Length: 283
Image (cartoon, rainbow, N blue to C red; front, side, top):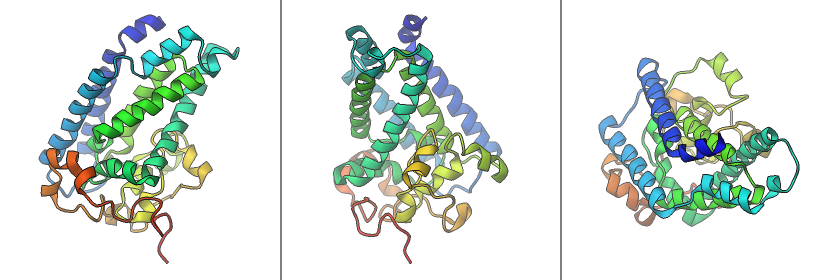
């Protein structure tokens, strides 16, 4: 069964990606949370174009990606769960949780290191916040993320099935928590105890630096609470907050070619965590 799942991993991920994307996109149309301000056609062309580029790049550069690395680690006996006797299901569950914590730490790293922030600010430069924002990451960031992920997979000896589950969950929750989907307040309050919700993560895409540097979680919401980076609501409310980065407000500078060049041509602003005052609310 595991071998069958691994052989069909690209198809499994594609089916889940398309299904979740369509479900969330239709939900946004039926029950939008905020009024979008930028041209949806040009944004979607750029954001979906990034997905196509990143998918092709990963397939070309990584003959063995994270799932394949998990299989190799199992064969070689590398990593924690290949050397500690625990039930398979325990290894799978713990691997998913550990990988999610790794993504949280990686996300904070991309806000802390100047060069990494330059790559990551392409994601934050989106002028609106919807399902396609969750797929908008610079190709170099994707490559670095894949290398980190592969290293962690080997280190913990993650079972291959746990890596597939994690990848599907990460892609799905990223599209959900970046969506412009209206979630009733009472439902959101309960839901964000178990998963990062759109209202929780939208705070992270505020133009205000102290809000940008909060709510780093993508899938599980616990890390922000445990690590002191959780912010419940945006200062100006979800309808009043501005999405994006202060230094990139001109839509003509956010076409597909220009956002690819953004790390090398754009200014980082005061958003990196190393900047004075970027991680606290102005008094």
